[in-house]
Image 1 (cartoon, rainbow, N blue to C red):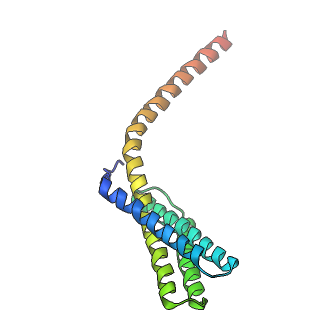
Image 2 (spheres, rainbow, N blue to C red; image 1 turned 60 degrees about the vertical axis):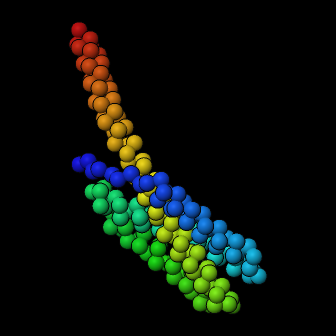
Image 3 (tube, rainbow, N blue to C red; image 1 turned 90 degrees about the vertical axis):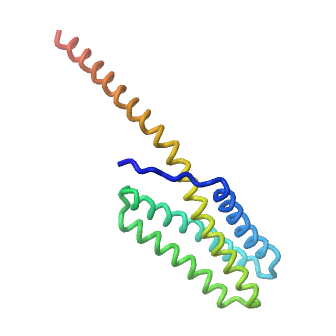
Length: 164
């Protein structure tokens, strides 16, 4: 089953990458300039990395399901759990942090921007790869088919020579 993929525009790709870079940079710059202890900075950094990974994994599994690619319900549910957990870790950390309300809002907004942008960037990468893969799949299938035919022909020659 072959689906047509709408290739993203260069403006959308640029906006997606700019949003991801802006969100991650703002979050990292905020951590760098904060007066938190090093273990707190590490907690927030790992929370961001975990959130980015879980959001991209969830986007990929949702897209795989939409395209009819088999995804186990265990992995699908683990992706959802990871996204909810990462958002919970950030929320609980900010709730208990001794930061100004404006700082908490800054971290929350840059975090959400980074997650959203990572999903958009991953979608763009997959859409672009989908266009080139559709062309390569046809060539790959043809190559495997003809390689198997030649292997079968070689096996037939070997078997017939063994009978003599």
